[in-house]
Image (cartoon, rainbow, N blue to C red):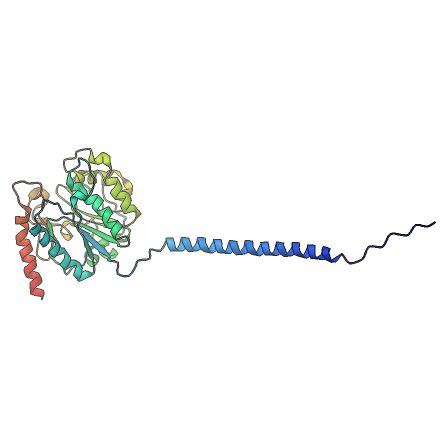
Length: 315
């Protein structure tokens, strides 16, 4: 007796088999599309971050310059009012801003209060995070020629390039460390003057940026504040500028009377060459705060009256 042959397999796969293969293929395709989309988004995000992080987007209304003047609580209110009147007239002309921190607002341990100018600049950079230049100006200084903008008078690259004192001893008269001769104005972040006795930290200009933060942090190092330098932060500045190449590479010295002419003729400081001449930008009563025989307010009052008369003539 013959057994029945087994049924022949159909030439077409069952419907459920076709559906299974189709679903697997579809899942692979969706996964591939998802991976491509994710990769595209990731690449776009990274490129956007890189491009935008390299561009400093400055909000409208940001001042190009902020003048920072640290005020001591011992200064009389009448004198403070004159200082502010002088600064406010100037910034109103050029679209700049001012900042008047109190010297007691910062923790400095036993260091002299003159050190306060360093954290004050850091503070100003926090308040004005998009401002390009910060002009640290002693309270015993007055802006005598308000028609001069700091931009055109000093920091514009071509102008600064023409002012730079190159291959000059950083600390007079015979420091072995000299300013670099190859630097250009657009690469400078710190602008200082020097007189016959050393660098002048009472009137200087600093460009905002990561380098500026590094410079201020280095200068304000607790170790330097504990050294009891004779000129406090002044001698510390001379030390860091000479022995930190990273700082020297961003430094420019400029002629003193550009931002720091003196009210009195002191031979050891530079004599008549650095004493105020009509038309100079800034005048300062150099050393008045250290000499008990002198009175800063009394010395500056004739200059304030002269400045006020000149301003009145313009109106």
